[in-house]
Length: 466
Image 1 (cartoon, helix red, strand yellow):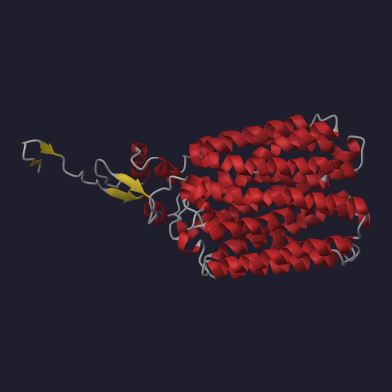
Image 2 (tube, rainbow, N blue to C red):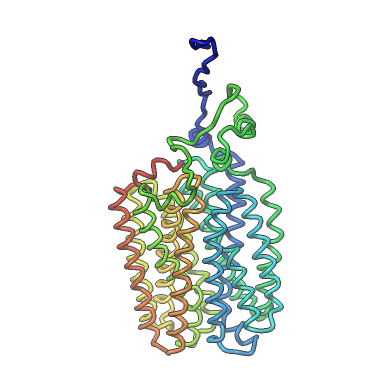
């Protein structure tokens, strides 16, 4: 009813808030349907290609150096600037995905690193290759955080960690695929062939993104009154009745912060952010130095052929895939922090062992590689899941992306140290003994994060993440 003032003027009543609909609960209540599987498959393919392009260079580094008329040490700038590019991309691209959407950023990244990888096949100098891999790093470092955010927001909560683990197995599968190619086709394709494959296939894969819709969670955060959200919900459930003027929200999420991704540095998330970023620095730094130099260390210090080590890493993929799937299955069933910490303790032991087991003792050496991959890849899966699920949708891509950017700083520092170790000709047992120490630091940081958050992903903050 309209009230009248003493002068007879209308006094506007307070507007009545319209009905609201919980989109997060709707997503969580849905059974697994073909569209969920399609999203999983497409994100997995995209991450496979990302993993292939990211990791093949380290496996053929000496061959590239020889092809360009130099030695393995001449590739140090290529490795360094690739990591710098990945750092820059992890800072810029995930916030862009939180601003304009997951799909357009994934398409941009596929276009970027696909085109530049193809161009790199015709590199004529170390300087040219350094520039191309540096710029490529901007694009392929963003695929993982944006892809995981996209997948997590499309998947019911009860299957979220498992689906993310499966996608990460495929990311590691890109590492496997490059190992298989090195083992079987290096002589036939030459190092240039790897860049051609790493360029053409991502460009073709852009078409896959046309088959899946943009994230509902992203659309709700962008505009709670977006009419296309209602259309999408009713397409997914024809029996759903929505009143005119319905607005949408995500679970018990509070109002979207006006500070956007910068809110992760506010009081609610600050300690979690500091610890997550710190452990990513050591984890991705360790992964970077071993991915780029382990084959070279074995080649230089033990005389192991590149093809042989690549074959051993193919076997090691069994460990990586197993570690990832076990991590995804267990994270919903036990304290995730103690689980991840135990993985990195095992990781440290396996890395240390690889510096002391003679490659001639093939069974023991390959077993150590399998255990190392189980712990390293599975442990990183746990960290990625923590970073993805610990923040709400308005900062989800940025949360895992900026954690990854801090990791890319480690990816710059650690390979520089790895290159120095190569130049100084430190012994293999000393190099890998030093490389095992960061894994123990990671375990301690994860344990501390678990104490801070009370054993729950995100702690108090995690209750908002949907």
